[in-house]
Length: 224
Image (cartoon, rainbow, N blue to C red; front, side, top):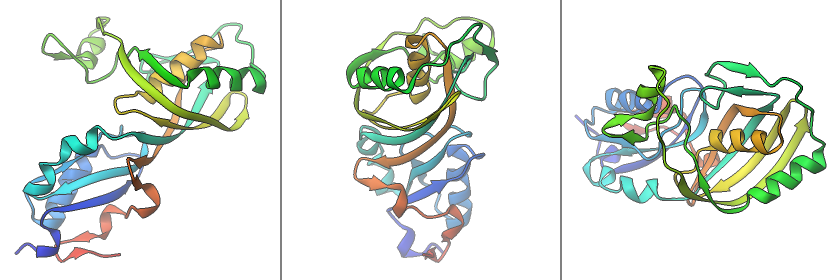
């Protein structure tokens, strides 16, 4: 029997590094006995942080509402190299002769990122091209012809910098790829960069500090 406490629930999950967003959804289905479960915004397996899980028919109907909300992240950029996936999971190629930028140079480039831009999605992304996902083509060695998409970076702050790593905090519009942002920052600085770590800290008004571990969910409800 399904607890009434679990019907039509919106649960904030603190996803750890490792599982996919779909893995979390499958786990919630098994732990609750509710078949209609979804999530509102994918986090890659190497990423962690806030994942909104929607339990029940009425909650899953609101999925698009959450997908269009702004997002907040803390990210670690790795300079001096590039990646086929723009993150730590791809094939890494060191940038020959890369010169470490000063903190002032890095902060200047970060400041220039604020505002509306047209961003080129990563080749290894779920963007559809003639019915096929970009990453399916990229895995076959085919360079996908992706179109730039308008995104907005509301704020970006440098939290720490010690070559080759920099930690930033960003607040961005829905649809912004943080790994593409890392790639573009590295390109602008002429030293290359890819995304080493990623933590989602907010989705609209929902905050990571209010999230729970997925193991807190049981058939009797949510154990806090």
